[in-house]
Amino acid sequence: MDFLFCRKLSSDKKGGPMGITILDHPIAKDALARLRDKSTLPVDFRREICRLSSLLAFETTRHLNTIDTSVETPLATSPAKIIARRHALVPIMRAGDGMLETFRILLPNALVWHMYVSRDEETFEPHCHGSKVPKRIPPDIGTCFLLDPMLATGGSASFAISHLKNAGAKNIIMVGVLGAPEGAAKLEHNHPDVPIILAAMDLRLNEKAYIVPGLGDAGDRQYPTE
Image (cartoon, rainbow, N blue to C red; front, top):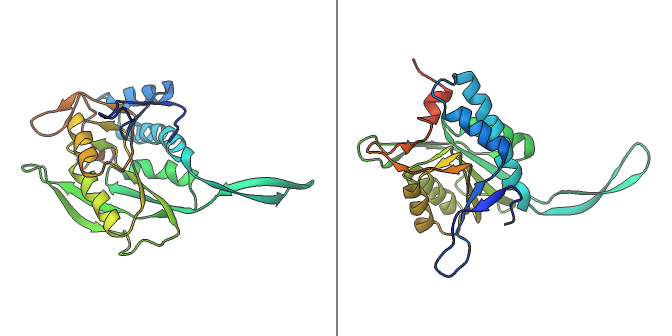
């Protein structure tokens, strides 16, 4: 895929591009700085997630195929192009909910399949609490966009991708805000066919498997419980 405002993070041993692409845009950097700031209030955090997701959505959907058609303008018949297939948005709740709104604006006809996945805070293993992904994905679905702001250990994303593949998904793209090398490596090992699109790749995970420097818990910062 060719992304206009992105850069490839690295290459594999054969010299080909790995599946990790980093968004490179001044507005993305500005939004990310505000997301990282611990003083950013939840209402502002949600706004910045939407702002950054609009750029991620724009670049991630650049590869979508179109078909030729025509429309009647107030003055004449005009050639036109429309998106060729239906697609699906798969937010991992709660954090992925903040990315959903802007993706739905760009893809108003997309299906939405929520997945409820959390990780055990001691073992860091993913636990699925529910999924709205159909048992068999309709054959006319083009791409499934997996939305999760934080690619930390990679456990939740890897689980969700396996779940989608088991349901018949053929094309999946992982879209996030921040990644850690550990999570990216896990995803590339388990699902090398799935592109990863991020706004930034951070340094590492800490002993609690949080991304450093990161931005904290994206779900809690959007929807605090205290």
